Structures are given as structure tokens and as C-alpha cells.
Length: 339
Image (cartoon, rainbow, N blue to C red; front, side):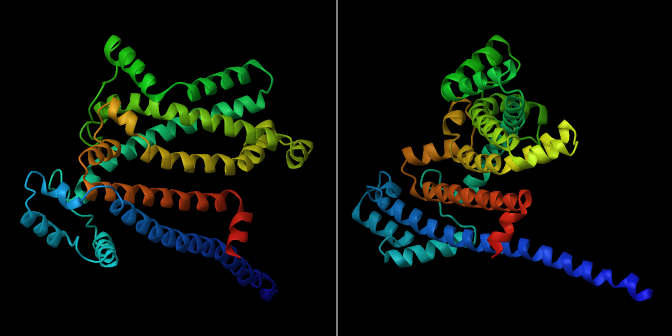
């Protein structure tokens, strides 16, 4: 009798370990692929910056362009070394957090990125939150209320969000809610830790500008995925079993639609981080976009190289998170990936 009661415990423990192994193996496989991809991207970034027209030594020299000054700069930065040696030096410093020194400001590139990146990350996070709430909510309503006025309104708003240019929407919002009706601030940035209220007053309008287009994309993709799920056999079976409407939509149709939605969100989040240039210029935010523009116009090769490398690393990291999210939403993906 005692043996019958205690026997299932090792079996349950073994089953738990077996269930956890595919997940760990899947994550390790994706992590290894991400590291290899980042290594290859670093080679492309390094070679691409070196392929830009012009001599980096001339940009670093500024007004002092005597042969002696140029030779001293090339010796200091190792520009006369073999390209392989230069890349090895660059990777070695990058792994230690040293991305070089800005020729425009004379400050470490890592410090400039550390000051600009939180601004863009906050803007991207607020825009993504807006897109998730509005996009997924409107997509569900449009799919469930197909052929009704709710679907027409959702489709019309999505089409409007995709059609309006970012710069025009930003200008209109500034004129309406920062000048005519001064509810929000038109420009500048205040850290959230310093003054949360003032921070949100300055970040709401940029988040609406950047998140409106993403919300439209998410809405259309959610609607299409939900329509496919609602017509699937497992949804009809769930309805036949007598499950409530909320359980059918939320527990079955929506969950199986999330793979498509997560894919769109992952791709668009990387775009938000790297593509916030116009929005940051309109609202004068000292983020990643402004740092990139300043580096391009001043031919600041070190800063440009660091910005592109960090943006690429962000894309790779986001794709890794998306892959992990896939495995959580649909266990079949991690079982196939582990094999």
C-alpha cells in the first residue's frame, strides 16, 4: 500500500524534468544562433564603416590637417594596421564596453549611447504599449463583430493610422495639444525618475505619433489571425462542448492567433528603436535617432559604428525574445526547435 502511494512521485518528477529539457535546449539553441549572428553583424558593421567614402583621419584631424597630424592620428587609432588587426582590437574593446571616442564631442561613445538609449527605449515602450492595447483590442473586436459597424470603424481607423505621415501627425498634435490646448509639452525630455508627471507630459505625444502606425499594423494582423482561428475546427469543438464565449475567444482563438501578433510586435519593436529618428527630431528628444543624425552629419565614425552595432544587437535580442515567446505560446514550436 505504501509502495502504491509513493510510486507516482518519482514518475511525476521525471515527467517534469523531461518537460523542462526541450525548453532549455530550445533557448540554448536560439542563444547560440544569436551569438553567431551578432558576431557576423559586427564584421559587416566594421567593414561597412571602413567602406564609407573619406578618410577617418581627416575627420578626426579637423582643421589641423598637416601630414604630421594625420600620421599621429593614424598611429593613435591604429588606422595604418591591417584590417584584421583593427577588427580584433575593436571587438576586444567592445567586449569590455569600450566603443571608442567620439570625434565630435571627445567623449566615450558608450557614454553617449548610455544617455540616448533610455530615451528611445522609453519612447518605444510607450508606443508598444499603445499599439498592444489599441491594436489587439480593435483586432479582436473587428474579428468578432465581422460585418458590423464595429469592424468598419476599426478598419477605417487602421487605414487612417497607416496612411497619415509621421511628421504631419506630429505637427498636428503639437499644434492641437501643446499650443492651442497646452495639455502636453511640445519638446524636451525630463527623466522619469526626476519628475514622472513632466516626463509623461513630454512623452505622450511622441508615443502616440510613433505608436499609431504600429497599432494599425497590429490591428490588421490580429483581425486576420483571429478570423482564421474562429473558423478552425478546434473552435467549433470548443463551442460544441458548451464553453462560454469568453473562453472560446480568449482561451482558444486568441492564444492561437498570438504567434502572428508576437511576430509583428517583435519586428516592429526593432523598427521603433531604430526608426524613431523623425519623431525624435519633431519633439527634440535626445534619443538614439538624434545621436545617429548628428553622427552622420559630422562624420563621427566611432559613434556611428557604435550606434549601428547597438541597434543590430537590439534586433537580435528582440528576435531571441520573440522565439522564446513562441515556445511559451505554442509548446510544439519548442519541441520542434529542440530537435
